[in-house]
Image (cartoon, rainbow, N blue to C red; front, side, top):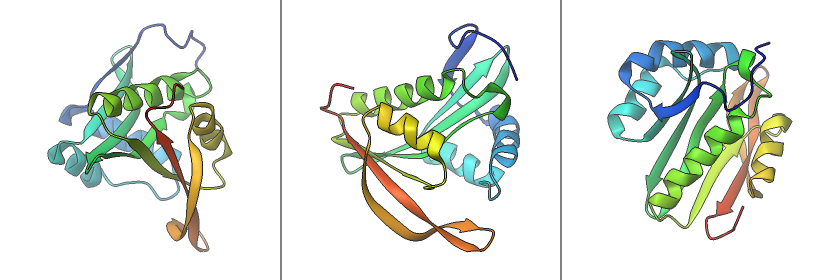
Amino acid sequence: MITMAPKTNVTLRGMVPGDLSQVSDIERRSYDFPWSHGVFRDCLLAGYNCVAVEHEEAVVGYGILSIAAGEAHILNLCIDPSYRSLGLGQRLLDELLSRARAAEVAQVLLEVRPSNTTAIALYRKRGFHKIADRKAYYQAADGREDASVFAKKLNELS
């Protein structure tokens, strides 16, 4: 595990095509059913808010935010396994929320696996509330897994 202060030598910046190999590598090491390189490329091409977390010239995390019809949707948020528990996920989430506020959207939505208790704790800490379930949303080893849908109204203070 990396030991560093969570705000030391870390930059949040717009993702560029040159980041996609590192992003895809983190995705593959983080999930049993990862997004493909092409999905990330398409998010960039579509003009989504794609944010890279950089430490010492290496991408160590990323977030993808879609904004449409007065809402924002966090499509993906991931920190490299070696950089977790350093506060980078919270910094990245706060950056995505800041971008959503700048776009003057009313609320931010996201889906998360109910088994991802670490992510759920982060989302709750930042003011997200569970609003629904999506049945059989995620691919899983034994078929499909439900998703919990969380929302945050952006007029809330947290």
